[in-house]
Length: 195
Length: 145
Image (cartoon, rainbow over the protein chains, first blue to last red):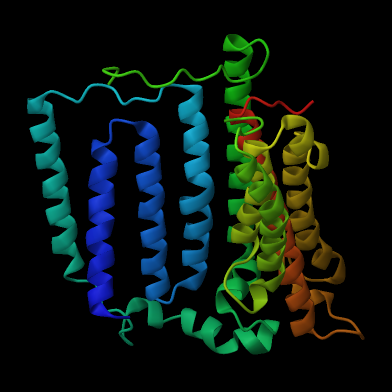
């Protein structure tokens, strides 16, 4: 990967995140978050993590934004008043110190692609070397997820279905209370000075 | 936003593009052995192919092919596919989810694991597809009738 493009993506990433935080209109914020996810996906692809990049592009840049917009249409479109100045300063201090701790801890991380990193020792090398012979599957990520570590994937699938069912239960109750017809009320257009 | 979108251009484009997005999702699921993706990403793409008509077309059209009941049914069916694939090797002396135990005269252990991965990916894809469609339908206020 090329350093200049990498840096450009990282700057764009931070810029979209800040803009999304400051957007008064929540749909604008969701659009910016979608761009954020797309840039993240490009960064993943640059790191040759193509599977992760594909999921990030499909979920983060696609479906999640859509679900956010639906939720905004069902609730309110404008963000609430910003927190008072003192609260904001303390939040910035907390987040800044946390960032400092994370950056300090990242000094000890092994270099990307280092042969003596923990990920290159132990059982991972077995999976990389034997995936094709064991399972006829050239894509090691697929054989890891669906064969070697299939119990993990089974658990994840349970989690996804449980999450969807929980959302259904919660939202069905809400719709039953507020909307007897079971449809979303039409959205009134944004008024000037509403924010 | 839910229901028919005012612009003809948007409606026609969505109607033309949606089946291909769905097809692409199935391709991602099936092609997970050789390329990026697999059940999860493919299921999301297939769900987008179903959700796009629901956003842009009239409800009577978009809920005709995939009614609101398809979400819960697909979610449950996918999980059953996964669990059945996990349990099947136990009848042939293997442990849970050990597809290699399914080998017989027609396929060796590696081939059995290859096919096991395929079926499991399909199960994951169907579950994710059902879950995403279910969440969308609930947010859009369409309960499975």
